[in-house]
Length: 241
Ligand code: SF4
Ligand code: FES
Image 1 (cartoon, helix red, strand yellow):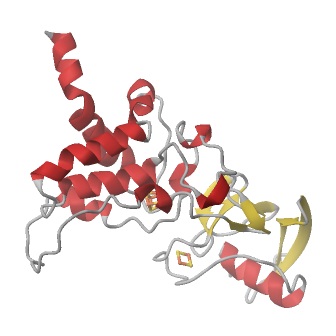
Image 2 (cartoon, protein in one colour):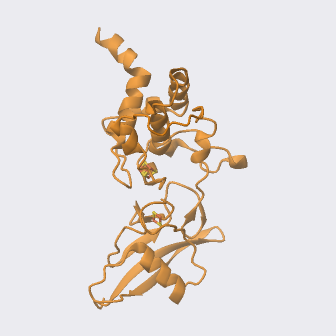
Image 3 (cartoon, protein in one colour):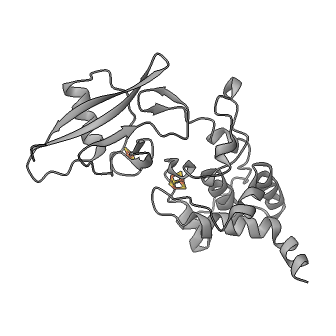
């Protein structure tokens, strides 16, 4: 391939069929190392005018542009393209059209679980882990490799929530759990919710758990481990006696 061009394959999904199209990206300069989103925008402009994909901030803030690159989830606005890359919709959620997936089964898991009473207090102290967790941009890259999300029937009826959790939903629960505004009496309910989403599976698979956050949050140490400790530590203590 000429050095002023890049060849990519884009997986499209239409009329219940998926198929690949090839697109040759024309670089704006010889040194350009385009992002996936640059390629998609040019492909839409030059060749596939009805190409469907999502993007918002173009700056790693909104989390809606996630696609798979060679089978792994990446933010389209931050991942650079290499020759012959395959761009496809994330494999962990149902496809609506082309690169657009149905996302609402995930946030629906959290409906009704933020029962922190309103307080006009913005200066309340929170541990640093809480602030780390606020970096989540809801990109859903962490669904990849999650043994719990794998168990979900993605074709849920009536826009229901998925039955099993995922690192994102547990991050939301853990953040709520350590939020200094969460009253003590709510914490038991948060742990029960985590258990109802299948938290125990992580206990069995913790060692081999390969989950990766799109923005670098340490999901195993800052989300799964503390939740497991809060939910099951008494059992481990019992065993160790
Ligand atoms: S935890 Fe990380 S990978 Fe998962 S949704 Fe949030 S930012 Fe994306
Ligand atoms: S467009 Fe907002 S994170 Fe990529």
